[in-house]
Image (cartoon, rainbow, N blue to C red; front, side):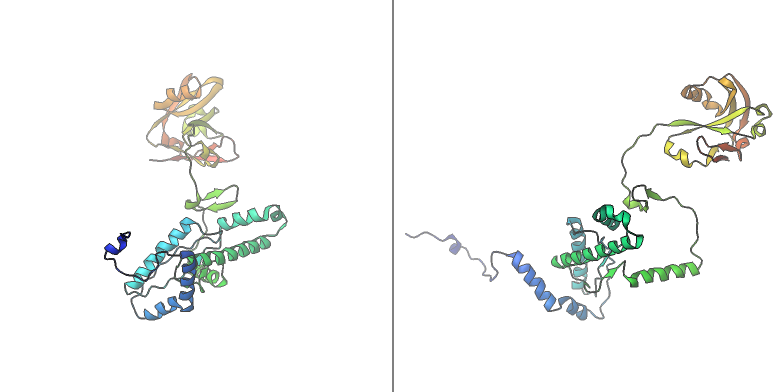
Length: 321
């Protein structure tokens, strides 16, 4: 009796597809066929006149080879574009690259090393442009290898003259309309790279700072608070939980309706403190209150110029309700 072929006992459908996908060979052949047949161009032609669906793709940086995150981002967007195309929309996809900014500068700095110190700014910019051009081409080949459809022969590059001219034109338009002005604005700043940083480029870590009490001397005008303070060495004590802000301090805040006192301490010094916090502040700062020379509301301190504790600058007394 012969050996029973179990496959022959099951009624399975017949298929011409091989059991082995052999993707390393078949995928490049398939991509080559799509390219030769101009499949993307034929899709665009077939969808002429259909409702338009545009996916505006935030570009990757041209600062290295693609990685899993870059690939996932591009593939998922390709799913969307292709699904909308299959749903009947005219959905072209224009890829692009961000060719400016810190990610590329850092990579070029690493490549140049000590040579950068002997190069002009123009030469460094040219090196950045060459670096970006190199990785635009590398990433373009990688995205096409992943089967992503798009206008790969006509992408947008932020460093192209046409792109930069468009930005300059838009800026001039806003300038002519009066929308551009010069003012002060706090920005994140990297001391190492000497450049402003976007919020997304800032990495945070948990940090605990001590609260501190800081003395701001009043070089003149003490008699305006109360006649009893004329000729005395008067200072206001500020308490803060953000000690790193002291170098940038420009003002002292006082409540207009809270009661403040001028307390005489050792050595004839006089400290201005909120009455309710006098004992707590004295204990924390380590001074002994000998007497209270004056009592007054916070609005009496508005407009006085206190001396910054360690910079040649004044901190204005301000009343905040």
